[in-house]
Length: 189
Length: 424
Image (cartoon, rainbow over all chains, first blue to last red; front, side, top):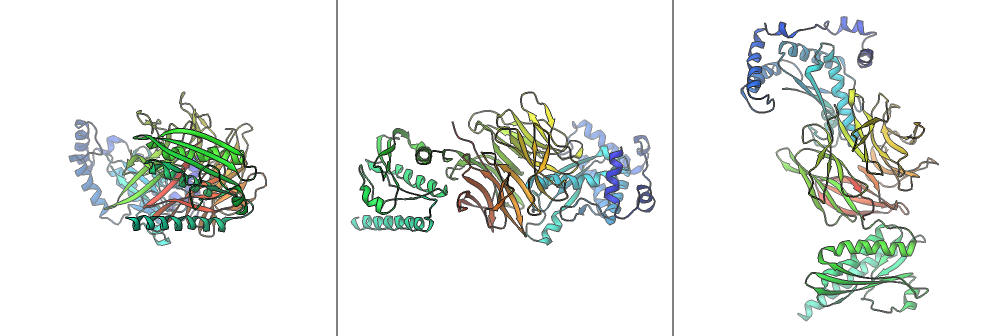
């Protein structure tokens, strides 16, 4: 527990003097949400139907099925708001800036409203430096995002993977491309 | 027809001269000048001609020899005085004879120009498919006879190639080849990234990282026997950067259990994990010293990416690199005294050699994006990959004279070459 707090402090220290200040200034206070509470939300009823269809189909989350279609509608609606599904990072950096924190909070709210959805955070790096180091760096970026979602008790629904420098968005070998490639992508499942 | 033969002969002569010109450029006091004559051929055995050619290339790349061909095929007794005048110190000559549809007899002799003595002589029956292998084997024999140390020619490479298939799709291949990058064979094709291939010390296995299950996992493949590829267990988080212990019984891995990227050793038989680093920074790209008593790894614990050595007996960790703001992916030389690594110079990534005791750092290459250095088993050369424009290049640089030779250039990218130990 101590470790989580200290890491969060490192991530956010640039803008705030303490974690308490930070909650007051930037973050709405994390809520504990139980599964029973969630089912009463109308939006979630749709998802609940989903979950039963998952079970009847032997829990195939990646396969094409009706549940995915319903999910994608919910996620597509969310995507149409002014939320970012990709966060960018500085060279060799894992720090989350204030704008990114605001985006992450939107995702936290979305996840609390849609308790059947799980999130995969995919961390990426630009091509500079060795492949194995970049694989580690990509994971650290995704973990920085997960730390903040963890403040909302969402950790158990967040999966982190790293693709290192292996899946660049842009192939060019210049700063413009590198900026776009140093990123964490939000993928709902 | 006669005209055609004359044409072929003159072309042949000019090729020979081209080789000699290169030789003259390279001649310095450290280089051992030798002649490797084309083998004399009895009957229809032209396929065997490649042997002398492969051997000359091997010797010239080693950085320790300049190997030329004679302008003619040397039979039996060469004119030693003539070669002495040309400052040639040793002569290799050979004979090829076809004894059945696919089998040749190969005879070879190594002669010392000064003592007129035979330094090495042998005779083999070789199957058609073994022509290149025998050329590498004979290169090692002659290298040893002349220098008293082992050559690295009869060995193999493993590396990754990547080609664009259009529509954003890429094809990753794990290839193995002879030590001169010839005779390449694809042992794995994948649409998902494949990384970090490493030969096991017994040459029978290759460990690598694959994203086939959408995350980095470590696999062990058996390229020469029908045996199922083995996946290491799921360790929670990333599993990557495999590297074998010299005894072949365990692997070093980078794992991110609890999110912290550290080096672990994984015992294959007992499946036991031992954590070797604990820093909160990134620790990765570990490999063993030749004796297995130390590991070298990359870490950003100082705030910069640098190379560290952990002594496994004392558990002490010392920073190895102090020159430059970026040093990574280091490997021990076979004698354990130096490290090869990627070193950043300005905006360029180059291969550098570090003397561990004196901390002297020598930059070995002068490209922009050199990656993944690895020593030949005798420590005489370093192989590395470079990507230039739309092609990937595998090159070797000799330790002695820092000469770089391109082994192969392929469309797309070439990555992460790894050199096997000696073949059995």
